[in-house]
Structure formats: structure tokens, C-alpha cells
Image (cartoon, rainbow, N blue to C red):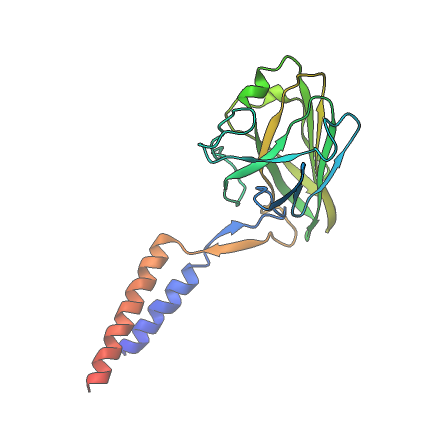
Length: 242
């Protein structure tokens, strides 16, 4: 009878552990933690980069920036980890995308597969660097995610050295491939620049087939599970003595 009770506790704990799912991010490397630097060029895993006329030098384009709150970049900015309130399931990490060039047209894009028709939440976080905010001329940025223009305009719409969250709902008619694109245009030298982090697409309850999720145990479930395991261990010891 006692063994049945312990097994029941284990089943209850394991079942409850599935009760609080968190969304899965359909965007790969949305926090830009995975990258490779070759000479002056930076490539980000999962993303495609194009740089138009006016690039400062051969190979320059979107860069990786450190966001550990203590290391200064080449312009003297010390940027804290992304602390904006966001629906992204990704950790902030210690790096972000750095869009910086006085006159170049820079594009960063990724193709994502969305498995269900319905409405997804899309978004990202961004900030103006302090050094860039002191420059005289505006730059512009356009963020298009799954067919929705999340932002489009001067980079001054983001906070200076303060992470700003931007989001929207994207409704797709059918499962398929969709794009995530950031377009950055430096205006006149010296122009402002921005950092981008935690780009995401997550599903919600309006999806016809349900969204992808990762089950996460609730604290109470973990307590029940720990108690059940302890009881099972004690019962095992008592049986072995007999």
C-alpha cells in the first residue's frame, strides 16, 4: 500500500511538471550569442548579412557587441545585458547585434519555419549607444518579422544606453517559411547606431495547431517530486533490512 502511495506521488509530480510550458523561440540565434569573426567581418549563425554601397571598409558590416556591463566597445560604450521586459524565451547572454556604419546600408535576415496558421507574437529589444547618440545625424532602422513591420524610422525611437522592447502580433495564413529582416541605413557621417538583442517569434493560443513549448516544472511540483523520491528511498531501505 505504501509503495502504491509513493508511486502515485511520483506520477502526480511528473504530471504537474508539464503544467507550465514556456514558449519556444522559432528564431535561431535570436540573442546573437553564436558568431564568427573573420578579419573585419562578423557572421552570425543562422543569419544572412548583406552590406550595400557606402560601407566604411571592405568586410565591415553588422558586428557583435559585448553586453556584460563591464567591457567597453571600441567607441567606449559599456553596455549592460539586455534587461527589457520581453516575451522572448532566450537568455540575454553577453553579446548583441551591433548595427554601426555612418553611410552603409546593412541588412540582416533569417528564414524561419512556422508550423501552424494563426497569430504569433514577434519582437526584439534594442538601444542607442551613448557614443552614437552624441552623433549629429540620424540613422534609420526597419524591422520586418513574419510579414509585420515592427518598427520603421529613426533609431532615436530606442532608449539611449537603455534596452527598449518592441513587439507586435503577426498573423499567418498557413504553415511555411517566413522571414525576419533588419534593415539599417546610416545617413551622413557621423551617424547614430544601435544594438539589437533577443529577437523572437513565439506562438500563442490563437494558433490552429498550438504553439511549440518546453515543459517547465512548477516549484510546487518539484517539492512533491522531492518528497516522493525521499519516501521511495526510505521505503527501499526498510525493505532491504528485512
